Image (cartoon, rainbow, N blue to C red; front, side, top):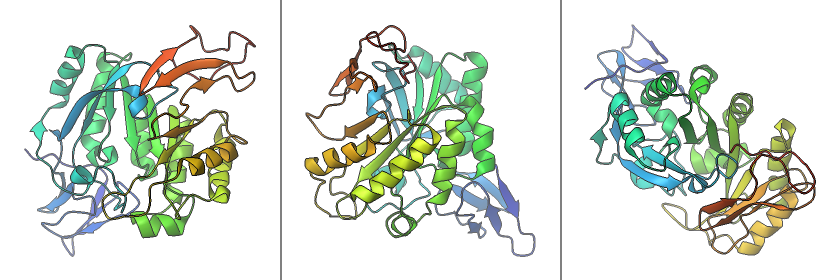
Length: 330
């Protein structure tokens, strides 16, 4: 089943197509695909070749996405396909992001039916691979979900590498985004991910105006683990809103990168630096760490977390001890 893609321009002289979905702006020859491998030039029409094709599906704790400040303690149906517009050497989901995986077709209507049948589920998370490279399907499904029931949550876990126009069109149907900020160095982005920093920063700025946003930075030994770089990350986020949660995630050797796993002490030191600029900084991808949410004013425990399980200790988003407003969607 062919599904025409959005955001492209034909070149009648060469038969090539300029894809305008993401900052790569791929010029795609007839019969070929772009960097993401999900958008193909078929007879001078750009086709979304993974439309409706689901490679992974599971009911996950929302904390696993990770979302710590969006409906903590709930479950969310998580789906993904194949393809990505980055080439991260440390990709943890490379079997679907960098390779074409077996899939099952779900129309947007099928997906909504499935969402409604899953117990203890607040909605949908488009995740696992890069959901922006599933753009037409995500857009159609998200819009249909919101037309039928606006209380169903629609969330994205994304690298944020998308152009402004398609992002603007999608945001009205999105409740929350966790955006990977892989480094604060353009050189590191180019070398490790085959991408650029600034478009990701633009996505964070735009998304924070429209929906709930959390940021994840995977801390890689000798790459982005300096105190100065995390200070710059935290200052950038705080310039938008110091209540945006930052997740500092531990790197383990995987795919094409074989650096040593990030030491726990490094993560703790970086957390201390980031907390000087942000109210909520968490360490992730590590067992036994403190993942609780505390009141940024008086330190009272607001949410207890252990192994992706959360216990919310308040019934409204304010501290019961000092009255401080807590940046928490319940």
